[in-house]
Image (cartoon, rainbow, N blue to C red; front, side):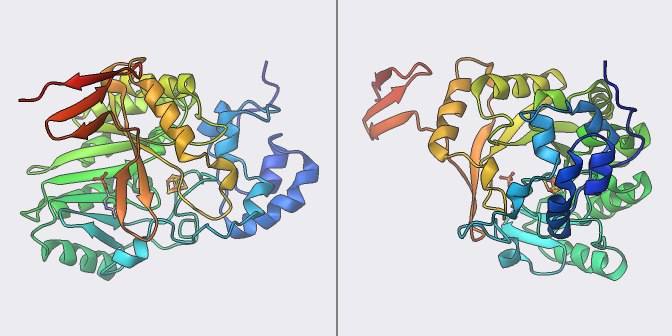
Length: 351
Ligand SMILES: *Cc1c(COP(=O)(O)O)cnc(C)c1O
Ligand code: SF4
């Protein structure tokens, strides 16, 4: 039996967390120091998924602030993936020729403690409106190489259906924009926001809409979250996954396998597994790349080929993403050797 009353609203302060029984009263002062730097928000849907009193709970670990966030390491970076190096106008990050990010909101329904944009996101930031949005769209319109626009933030699913629909139509009106991709945590973090009207608003003639769903543990897939994902899939949107490999959350093959199966069962195609970025105060979430490779390699053979996300690192400094999983091929032209999922090596008789 859960003795807590169900949370009726988003928890935003250490005081709220104490009142909800999620942290001991004695921790509030120290967490106020964390809160002064990094925003806190835990929605009712996420609060319901947390097992209070379980220090190792993988949901709590992602959202409840910790004193470890005050431990800033010398190798950590305020802008770990180098967004600023590729921002031609406010709200745009244009790193690869054929696709650009459009960051229209700074706020999120929840604030993940490992967030790679934690220095940029928060409830205070203004969303891109009016002249600034027009300038960002004008940049996209003037760059014929951009065929894909990736809406991120913050979390763009906090927009109303009317605004999301407006942006979709304005992007679809640009001839060379063929793909619109939204990156969001809302379907698991605040599933009621995904109404049928919202899902419908993301579609427009002349563009294909993809939605990358951010989730890191199978327990994030509540009944309400599954229903939200079904509304998106039924509306004709293509769903792909996005997760971060996190110490104490999903850093073992069985937990990661359960997560990938949860995506697949809900019509979300596994796409990306990110190695944790060097965001400030997040060293307690990081594991070594060698550990990551071992965990990811264990998925191969254990899980359907539909369940294999690409393991990537966003190279610090704005150099983009690189796959960092173990290689299966060695040798050279004419003399290749290829490793199977058990680790056995076979010659490939090319020619
Ligand atoms: C991650 C990212 C993308 C998308 O990369 P994909 O490999 O297509 O998923 C595009 N632009 C920027 C700036 C990014 O950081
Ligand atoms: S939802 Fe995304 S942008 Fe928002 S806090 Fe979490 S990781 Fe950061």
